[in-house]
Length: 268
View 1 (cartoon, rainbow, N blue to C red):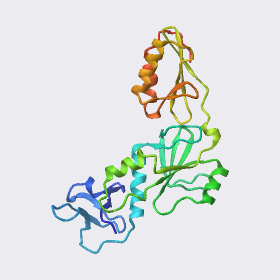
View 2 (view 1 turned 135 degrees about the vertical axis):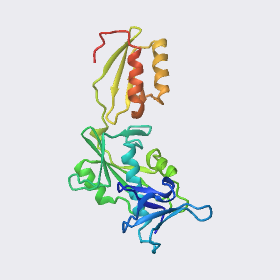
View 3 (view 1 turned 45 degrees about the vertical axis):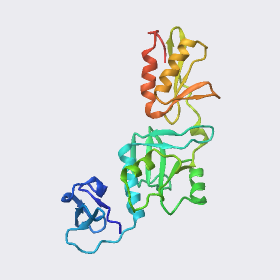
View 4 (view 1 turned 30 degrees about the vertical axis):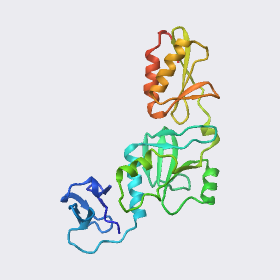
């Protein structure tokens, strides 16, 4: 087995680079629960060994990586995902909670992230990927699901920080197994802010991104809105003539727009 991983006192999977050397790591074998020693000398590759010095227990890198990926997503509470149909850029999903190995309908994914009451199923794939039958079931149940391909995260020279970026930030290794059309439709409840006498509309889209729209042309107001949107990595949507700010920065952008409000009576 790869001896780069063990479990800590809370039962969480942990990499050798994240602990102190020796028995002070307070780690245990993933398989047999025996106390582990973190061997971090100057010559050999850093690894865990059983305190009794017995032969390493057998467990696959795939199983360990699965647990590590789930831990990373649960700790972050957010995930970058590729665009769905009708979208042009990746987006961030921010979850109110993330449940592990929970059953939803007749499906039991690796994780379920909840944005409000909307569940997003998350599958971590190393050697086994979702087939046509599973995808058909997701469509029938209308369950949004994204799959993360982690097969490139090999045990040799495994770097947990590189793995975290790949799991959370990268979208080239992710694909939607199913994203219901109705879930992609934006909410049309808008908040109106008045800047220099010009209406500016704010609207949160289904996945949490912020749409900022200025229906009337005004160079000064447009410049203010553009500066705020770009400050938070916003992109111009040529189809709908508005700025789209990613979910993780949406609240800050909305607050900055509201700070420009010069009408105390602006209604939501």
